[in-house]
Amino acid sequence: MKLREGDFAKFVSRDGLLLGAVVLDYAIRRETNKAIETLNRMGIRTFLLTDEGRTVAAHARQEHKIDPVKCELLPEIKLEDVKSLVAQGNEVAIIGDGFNDALARRQASLEIAIRSETDAAREGFNVVLPSADLRKLVEVIKIARRARHTIWRNFACTLLTDLVGIALAAGG
Image (cartoon, rainbow, N blue to C red; front, side, top):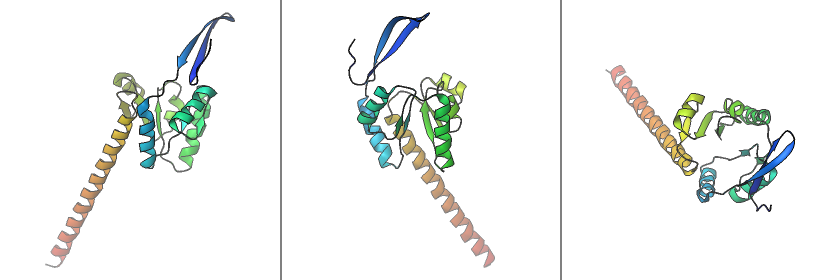
């Protein structure tokens, strides 16, 4: 069996006997690179913490230009990495499936799921993306930033109006 760059194999065995292998293609979604570039321009740094092997991680690093990339991680190691980022004062968002990422997710500021809303709601994700298209995440962040800007602008206008009203009332 010949693997192409980005492919990886999962082996199946029973009672110590190799039954076969399943070769999976780590397909690069064209829109992922664009989404990561946009996130970087928005000041959002991307990391890849994965339980996948070195081949998949190297392929993701090269194709998606993500750095750092850490691979072959146990859930406990992902947890320590997230704790370290949070301890450094970073806001951390994790995009994960919930199972292998559950420990690390709980330490993050934002938990993002890419799957059905029902499963994600049951596991307590903050955001559910309808597909693996990370451009949807970029849209969510842009909407959230606009909303935050609007809230602060309204707060400032309200505060200014109140101060003017207090000054007028104090002046008679």
